[in-house]
Image 1: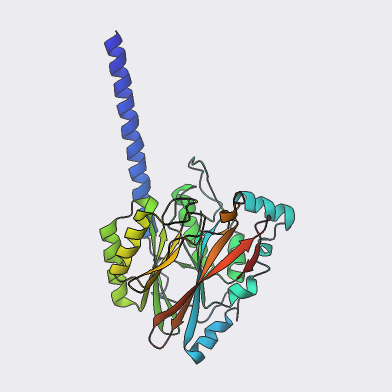
Image 2: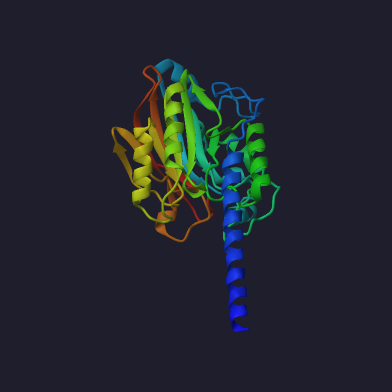
Length: 332
């Protein structure tokens, strides 16, 4: 009797382990599959020179200037999360106006020729919470706001993008395209004749090193600049770990011209490898984390590009601070 009881426990445990790993494998496979979906109606190259979004005309004055002085200024920011405490604060303190989060720095943001960030979760009203410890889903009303303050595109390769399942992810992609945003990894960006490809890579979606290297190498053959946007590292650690360093250096060896990172929620070091800049983590841009000095500010990476030789001339890491309402106070 006792032996039969033990066998039942062992069989039950085995079945549980099998189901757990099967679901996990399906989750990762589905993410990778859906993240590669291309929209056939879209043009091969996304032209950012002329923006037709309502109320968004002439919001990038530097774009016209770039054709005169031969320079572009592209900017990257870290995690953008407009749910949970941020949503509560916007409703309580700003009467539901998400634009107030950026009101003090919107002109600065709109001055960049290209502005990219990590969208930390789906923007959708579809899907169901998959049951994570922390699950985010942002209200679709935030997209016109992000467009109006200067954002041109986002990386979706992160550990929260599937918090509400594949339906919410698919809906997010459709909404981003409808709002004229670039999704990292799907379209080439042409800025005054400089072809830029931003490739997203996610440590938490079974990142394959050899596949990453091949993808970067192929992208470099067809583009002037390849920028690898990573979601990697340890949360709240101000120094990159060995994995981050190894992955970033491998990406550069494969042809990447710039490495941009997110996920740790704090800013990590900016350094060079083979004369290529690595920003391991830009920390938070908009997030409801106000529990430590390191999470109360983030980084904005300014990248100066020479349009004549189509190369990165300089990068500058700016400090982004936000207040107790999660409103951005300054970019220094």
